[in-house]
Amino acid sequence: MATPDAIQDSSLQNDSGHEENSAQENYRGVWDGRIGFGRKAALLVVDFMQGYVREESPLFAPGVVEAVANMPPLLDAARQSGTPVIHTNILYHAPDQVDGGIWVKKSPVMRAMVAGNPFAEFCTEVVPDSTEPVITKQYASAFFGTSLASMLVAMGVDTIIVTGCSTSGCIRATAVDGLQYGFRVMVVRDCVGDRHPDPHEANLFDIDSKYGDVIDRQAAIDHLLGG
Image (cartoon, rainbow, N blue to C red; front, side, top):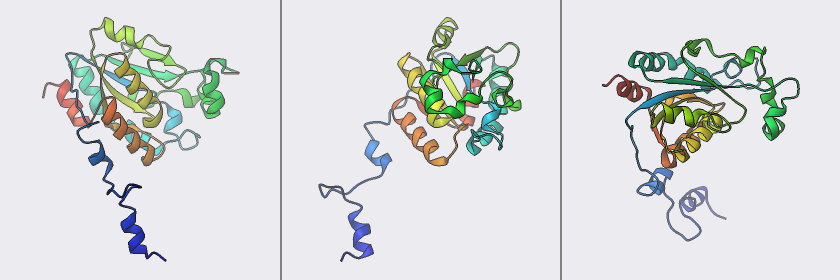
């Protein structure tokens, strides 16, 4: 019978007998490119809605609470620097949410996102300014079925600074589509959140590897303020 130490040692090898390495080592030199900021950025604030930060909500996500709390300095920097700020929310047509299609069948918890439900209101820390557009969407990506790409192109934006929730859902989908529409994607680690740290970290790793750059809040603020 194999000893615990032998089992632990064997776990370091794959089926070919080669030693396994960490994800970072495995990706190094293959999926670790950096794109950096372009000429003009916009701050995208994705779905920071009350349903994700109120404990009585089935959508409650502790990581989103922290992300929302981290937003004001970044939002202030964007407004101070004249950087376009675009918000998104999710709203469905009551009572049947037919515009949610298969998604609300797969994830019926989303049916709470209807006008008049407090869970569908913006978090107080990130309420849009009257001059900031709000794009209403029905699916995960901020680009799918919306005018976001056209709006960004018209403003001359080539870089989107992505914040919001959730990391494994709407943030990932928006990052993938942002890249596919030709934008440089910067996801702010401190300002995105999820229900659980495991999918949060896994998706940040994957986004940073393949679809954009994951940066911290201070790096985003420094860029916006010319630091």
